[in-house]
Length: 285
Image (spheres, rainbow, N blue to C red):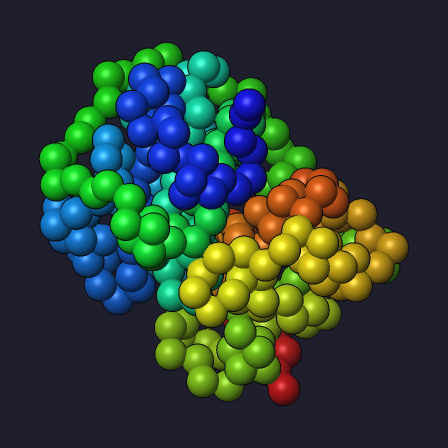
């Protein structure tokens, strides 16, 4: 059985020692980028490999041009996946410990793998905290994987650039969703990016609404109803999700796939890239 969206701790427990399973720890905190690596050294899932979000999963930040977590170029992404020992035979599992929505960072790596055609990737439902709550085994052994040859199959239909997002706002058959909390959507309480507000015409769809407070996903049918209400007649292929920097919005893209509606698009540059050009419009309130 292949896992392509979520996997439970109980199911993962059965495959900890499978050589064709790769487990990646991407714990990360905004404003404290070393916290995840420090926590990994203290303890982690057995046989899991640490992957640093900003140092390994993102491209170079170019002030005035890119967002805070730009997309890694295709060639560099292929090299990363090859170095991490991923090929077509490998089932990938990714986990984090993001507050209130475990998987909000792991979903970015999930999306990157699907962007390059690797379907056998799942996010650990409930993440690190769900694993601990079951008293499952943990480890302090630092792990690496033997390299494999990753062969990409680019899927541009799940990607959205700034130009794509601007164009989508001109057509009523498309929808753009802001995945941040309601206060940031309204332009209030902005503590991360230098300019507050949202992309005009965007609909608020907070990523946290997919999960219970402990970080586990809500039932599939409940999430399906949520996105059916948000999408209306718009197919997921014409829905673009963004957040502050293209991390947590990937959780909404994951949720759309998890509930069986299909593949939505991720605006990787997100708000932090949108505001690099003062000519781009901004809405508040």
